[in-house]
Length: 522
Image (tube, one colour):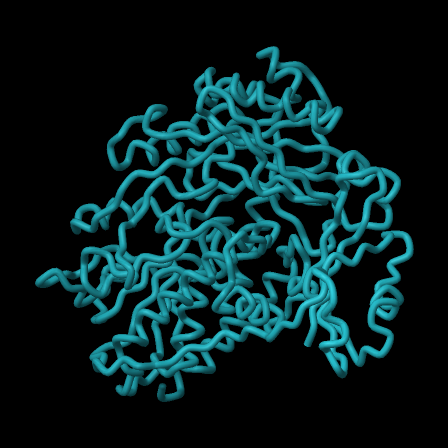
């Protein structure tokens, strides 16, 4: 197999096969390895890297854009010999927990997966009802339930992590196996979309069950039993369950869990995060700004913007082309927002968060000071618009005033015109204003937008410490994923779950006991 890189294609023609044939006339077949858009010049191009099957490969390896490659496939080996007395317990059914559960189930460890929220169909109904009627269920919402917080998002899979061991490739291929479109295997900015991700996660859950894993929904981890610095069991809704292995794949909204862990002397540290507002533009404005005359031939456009001044970085985060701003609240009396797109990204609007980094100098250096800061600004956002999503034009935000304007139809959840300047400390507001004005020099007209907030849960304000074997200071306790402070996004969280699985199979043998679940033995 040889790999040809830097093949430039006119978006209007999309004549990739002709270009490949001009380079290798006698090729047998090809597979797209990577696809991206180069919009740095007036003439926008699609850039492809392709893997080509051809006889006599050596004839064509004659320049820097053609090289011989071998396929990297993910492999693992079970070498653990220590016998497990009880099933591994996984808390959290987001991407880190699900991928740990999948590989443990595939390998005969029969995990028990605990999720405080609901199964996917019930969760979706609760979320839709919340968007329409504002009825919030604290354990079934955008943050909690099967699929985790990433389920109601854009389903972005981009990551800058090196994939020498093939874990990311494995994650993407499994998503395709469970129902995602195969363009995620080669797109430079892969995304699944909420509508497709719901089907993918449902299929993955059913596969885990068929392999011997068990799910329990509406089940919250309320405490851990520890003896001699080892986990010996957990309390789920105050029911005691014995376990040797506790994998914590909790989300960054699990504030009660963080406090419970602290009471049990689990070592955690405070970490910086970012807060800010969602900005909404017409999708065609962003598409034309990024791609010009080529925009109608390309998928909805993304952007990535950064600005740094006075030690507070301001940047765009979780950009959702053709998407919606959603009410992502999970606690009564508090409000936070997020972005969401379906696979086709066919909303008339695009949005992203414009956020500013915050750390101990902004909220204090005690363990829960960052978490308390999140609570405080979410409560302000809730009170500002009486539980609706507060919205404002950037110009009014800059001038610190409320005025009438038409809020675009770009929201999942009801909105109310408000003065967003009342949520954050004003020095942070001014950093965002400076950033937005700078971004306007990069994308002319960018500051003519609608803002909504607050976006408070960009990442966890807490990190649960762990060693190279993924163990916390408590033996048998494995903190993983975004909520534990060890990943950011769907793909890296999934990979974190796989790495945790690898640590377990190096120490423990597959589970040998038999449990009766429902109508079958596992």
